[in-house]
Amino acid sequence: MVKQATLQSNKVSRIGDAEFALDNFNIQNEITASAWHDQVEPAIDATGVTVPICISLDLENLKCFEAVERQYERWGVIFHNSLAIQPSSPAFPTHSGLTVLIGAPKSGFLEATFLHPVNSVSVFVTSSQRLVLSAYDRDRQLLGQTVLPGANLANSDSAISPNTLLSITVNNIHSVTFCAFDGQFTLNDFRFCL
Image (cartoon, rainbow, N blue to C red; front, side):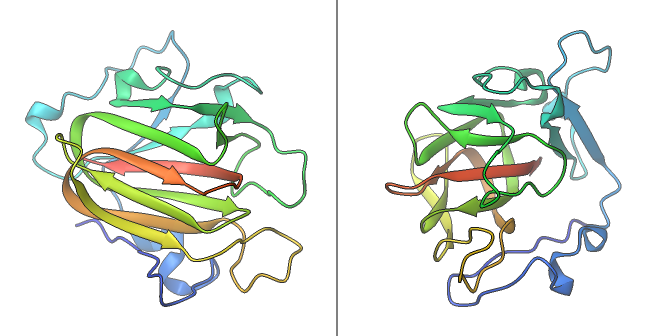
């Protein structure tokens, strides 16, 4: 069974809260997916999946300022309007590693499309504005949303810590979007479960 933490828009939680501890996920079927093109591990075949399999994307193999689109396609996800960076601003600390994703060249927006439907998506976010994570089905019908209610930059007066976990759990997610109108955000430890 996969435990999932969800940030509710009416409750401000912090990364240090017990329900956000990574050890609490108790996931036994987790794969860390790399962007390296010469890997020998087989890609995921979702047709035979009977227990939840979660895939965590390792962003560390991406080059700084690399456009991210099909690097994780073999793992079942394609990104749109995404760029890998190593933040130089202390306002955008990373949760783990040095590399994060941002929405670019169009700032404030990023989309991930799944080759096979998934049932949950989670990611640590730091944003300069309110950020909305929306999940869609195959027909682009909205399935659900999770909201970071305001900015959570480091060294600011925000009541929300940087790198807050946003997640959404609903059946048959075919794509998710991240939208921070007129804002900038970073995504770290992007993870999805089949």
